[in-house]
Length: 353
Image (cartoon, rainbow, N blue to C red; front, side, top):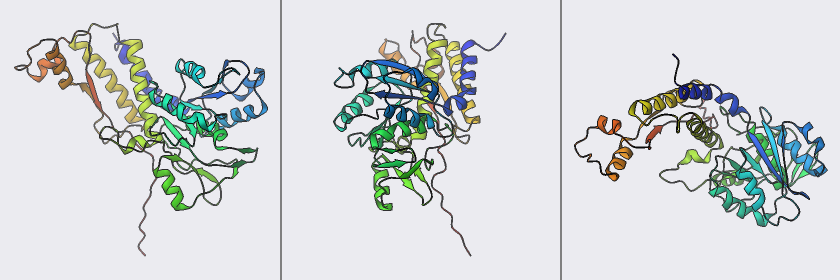
């Protein structure tokens, strides 16, 4: 006998988390004569795309530059000449799997509408937008550096979002994009230290020059309005990427290997819990979750108690174990506590002589 299938799948998913986290998928929405979708594994795959302009090839090259590694692939969605807004492209994007979106030819008047769409989109993905002043969400990267000059050409803020999307997609889950070098950049509109601090505090991703090379100043998204449920951690691109990966992994494995395939007994709930716990334990070993924190998943007793009451079960005299073992029809109520490791970004060194 071997482990139940759901356990095996969770263990395999956990074991490949690092590899999957190294290379994300970039989606590029481009202007075109006809609506088309192309999936490219490398820049050479663009050779057969007739409506790709020379400038659009540059956006594609920027995306494939990546960071530690290039993106896993780049998906091109051509809008078509008759599409006045991005509604059709958005419908296509909603049916595809991708991690970072760039729209390098977007007009300033369309940015706010894309922010609204992205905020409401029920997918674990992000978009890099130029000067997204209305954005206040972890799903929008508000890139604001202007007049970017590189060894290959000059780019506007919107055009260079393809480079930023590719860089973020190529950032491993164990590090952040903070101070990621952009070796091709030779100039841009620089800010003072005070201006950079203010921009970052407002949720802007900007470039910074250390006197030798251009870098990402800090890997932040546009989320600034914290709440009790969403704190400072949601401002960090690295943390949100890990959150999204964990949510996607658990959701996909449950859908593929558990939902509809097991009776909803207490024993089978425990099988699912044990499998998810094994996945979290693997993320601890990989340095994605904090080993000094108790990263656990368990039955949500309070939610289960409330559900039992809602279907007419008298729970007043039931012990906690009775609540856990009770028949919940087709419902499973779980809760989890995890702590995702951030990257080293702020160092304070006091030297006494």
